[in-house]
Length: 233
Image (tube, rainbow, N blue to C red):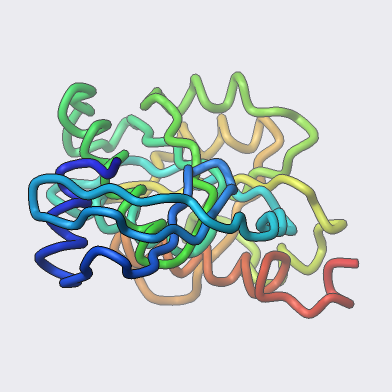
């Protein structure tokens, strides 16, 4: 049986009816073809038919560690990061955070956004939404053998594409993006002291949501699902 929200979408938005075929996935990678046995805006059910072959794992398990920006920008980041294939999303608090993260409402909404974005993009495995934490907490628990690239315009940051080409085909990679105003100089030093590497996204000053999505696109093109096989072999 589908949730009430899915029932409304199936019967009212998509206008599907009893007997129509739909794709059903469980968020862990499994997907089936199913036939609707009931389709109303209040209640929709289906019978599972054939299970699809398993989804191929990503070339790089990509984590986006994002300092939460103001307004609805984080909603956009969560949705588009899901579409772009990240494996984990870590909402962060930092010195220049515009607001402290309210755990109750935002996390539940971000989970819904992840599920909706996965459905829209045909993605079977939902990314993990890690509990929001402070930047220092992330740095303390970050595995030392997983590369950490921190987007930062100041200092001797290397272009992100160049930094990706110098990495030895990592199986895991974390991209750290600041909020409004970026990371403070003290935070930059703490990132470096924990083995992080500073990377640049070009000469222009980008909004937080633009920076996050630009960074993910570059990594996917250089190392991830969009890369040439010879680049990551």
